Length: 325
Ligand SMILES: [Zn+2]
Image 1 (cartoon, rainbow, N blue to C red):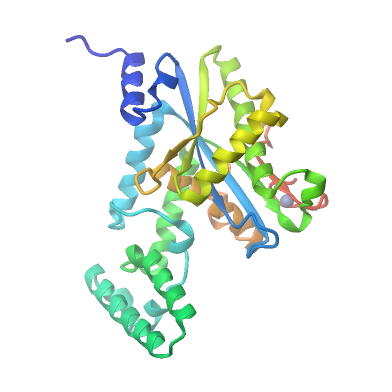
Image 2 (cartoon, rainbow, N blue to C red; image 1 turned 60 degrees about the horizontal axis):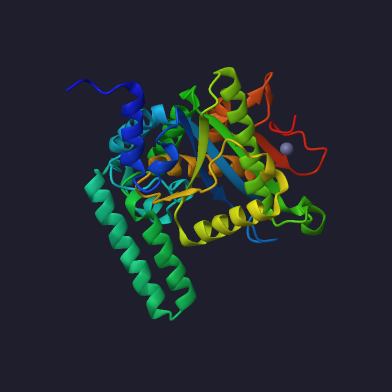
């Protein structure tokens, strides 16, 4: 058999990845995937000051390379089969600080000790008949269970290594809409926080694709949005897409992004987890002035003539932050 040409290899990879959607891609030269995730709540006031929608775009030809480099870092921290959920990883786990010589223990011992201490706490809450507190604690424990063998420093290192990795991906671009909800007026905006965020993010990704398409003289270059398939987000985004398409708005100018967003299981798709890390890094910056993760991924923000065009901070006009100036 003759070796497959570059194009047919790409087409078969596309079919393998997205059997149901391969009809979109079959005759297309180059596809850019934009993995999207949110951080904070879109409700006003909600329990965060900012709502962030971030997207990281990569050409399909780099997909395998990215997934492999992420897996390598995960394996180093014994998280091969676990999802990277940044906000839960970055938390302080109180039990860990209470366990004597926690840092000196091996992963198995740490896991045992934390589990023991958590079970004692759950029993205590059950006895106190505070069912709200009990349920919340149980949920927190479940969300962080995969990471309890890692100390706070190790978890910080894990997130930093992933952010450094993203920072080095010269082929990737970061887009985002970061809304300071105090300055958001839904009547003036004529849309909700999440509608504005999706519309802005998509128009920036579209703009980027048009520039790449022109510079590479490739009219058949297209982009696809990939979202986490959790029920809330997929329902919301599908409805928004429908609304945008039927009512026009900025979407009338969308030529390069395929109409149907793809919804994937974020547990299986490391790049959605990377989008989660990016949106978290942005929220930490705007809400806590924490630049630790943002500085590492910042080289990937889409720029034109050295000016940031890929991310917008929707806030007071006098804002002097890194993104606004
Ligand atoms: Zn700003």
